[in-house]
Image (cartoon, rainbow, N blue to C red; front, side, top):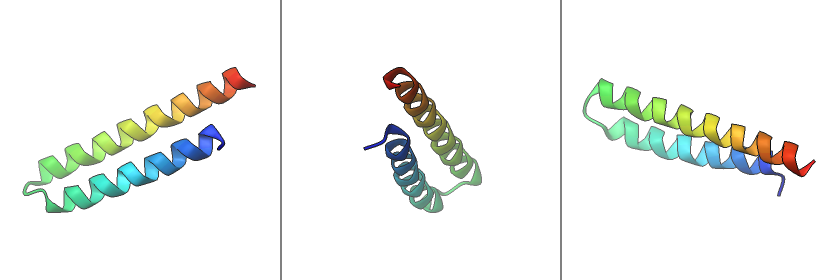
Length: 57
């Protein structure tokens, strides 16, 4: 599988899981933390995929 596609799929799964968990969190601050975590993990996965694709050629 193309690493970029793999990273996008992983990002979508993680974001969906954190979104579902975030809706059940009691406070808005915790929901915002879950959103920031999803974005951070997604950006890290995309950077990993891009560097892997660049190294592999």
